[in-house]
Length: 282
Image (cartoon, rainbow, N blue to C red):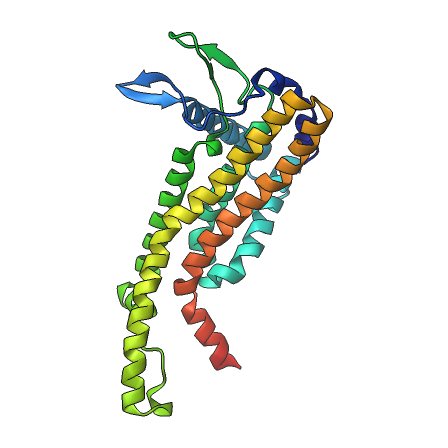
């Protein structure tokens, strides 16, 4: 956290040239095979390469007695795993952790990338004379957060169908959870229609995740970037530095929230067996 704190102090000095804030729309920089590459995609590629290099440098060849770099990576992974295991369950944590850990690390660094000097402030002049961002925080582009939400939804679909099954999914959504032994048949039948209606609402709730997840992440990152840049033009250095320190915390919280919600969605269905086992144990 200390290096990011220091970067939050220096970043506003570089934000003076772009006090108008971050453009809501990503800018296409060039094309590869006819496919446009935007400034947010370029930031994603750069940071992805840096993540791979950093892990390789820190860990190297894993050893039984870890060096400082390996110990750091293992402690971060272990802490995140301990936080997610009660949610997805012991049966599923080993299967889901690589995906969930990838979400957390990727989103966290993309959130914090806006604090790096030059990100969102390096400009180039377009052919029509306008000054455009050459590099911008990836999560300040709605396309990036939408892509992350789609990946989260696909991961949820895979884990639920692979490890819980379509029958468990349908029952969880539409099944009658009332106990026949404790209710009369007419009451049980009426509850069945109620559960069927609730299942329809739940389907809409699941579909809405494709909207709630990306817009929550995008809104916080985009708003924070504009706050820093605007303050950089109004009251340079000190006030934007305070906002930058706040963004360190916001970036961490938003990365954890996205990962936590993805884990909750998986655990709600795939962790049912574990819950039943605990009840029988008591």
